[in-house]
Image 1 (spheres, rainbow, N blue to C red):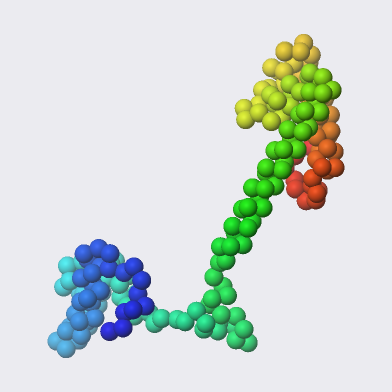
Image 2 (cartoon, rainbow, N blue to C red; image 1 turned 135 degrees about the vertical axis):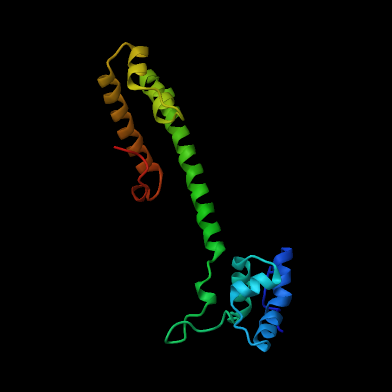
Amino acid sequence: MENYRLVKIGTTQGQRKLFFNLNKEKEKLKALGFNPSLSLLAKNLAVEEKEAKEMDIRLSTPEESLETPISDDGKQTLESTLADDSSEIADKLAEAEFKQMIKNKLEQFRKILVEEKAEKELYIFDHRLSAENPKTLQELGKKFGISRERVRQLEARLLKRLKQFLKQEVPDFEDYEFIRD
């Protein structure tokens, strides 16, 4: 039996028993005049029927070459349908670079707020826009003695400014929608 094509098969005792004896047991039952059903095979080999079914499928499925054409014109092969991990890696790398660039631009924007001595805007930026656990409008309003609505207006103006800054600084920024209006 040519089983060189089977990869990672027979990792448990039951699977090994099936791997080496399933076809032999089928032939033995046929020779005795029995129909070799999976339940009978499983019982005779002292394994679960589910395992016998899985192994039967594995052993009876013919191997396919990766170069087997799968389209009518013969141009598309099984190999061409496999995922290309290198493009996924490239996408992840590009995403990481983009995130780092945005992080740097946000730091630049923060420095501008520091230079302008825009205390309220800087506090809103640090504690609401770029915070992992943003403070509420109420908390910010209490800190500065202003209403929640005024904090919301300042935040909206700051977001608009940030978006304009990023549009100027980041190429193709319009393609990325991660800042809410």
